[in-house]
Length: 223
Image: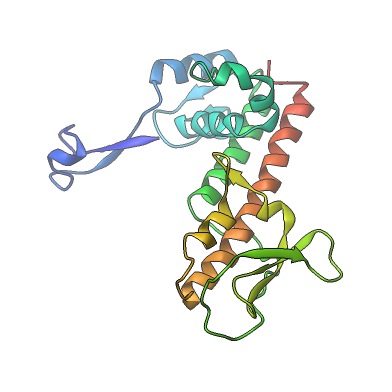
């Protein structure tokens, strides 16, 4: 979204602390200003703007694009084209639509960068040696939409939502791959907490993706 320059305009690697470092937007200012002009907004050279104050910043555009690239309807509609060329982003039809998606994109990016979502109640109820031997799942008792994820004969993560377990990035199931990469190792407390936090983040991200689709539906489509 931005790169660091020192007070003399040099790139960060040429001397980050020689002068007053500043974040310079990677969004083409001419493009940003053209979008702002179409919306009759003032364009800010950095950071984010405000819908009520009719100000648009490069961060708003970045998160707007981020939301669209994570939209299920966008990916499905342009699946074949995305395999052959760079994605093409529709220009925002109005300011409310842009800021609706920008808010979603901001929240989603934070989750993708490691922020945890609300606790969904994944447990680790049995003491043991914490060694990952074989990963298997079974439907949790009394909860058809959650799984017990076993790591050995006695220990498990309980109440893992099916949606989180089936969540993939680049066709890889995130949680299953993380556990299988630790086969033969003992999970430390930090590992257990990381798995639980990852489930929380995934579920929160799925909620945000749903919000993205709601923005698009409310607008009547992307184009």
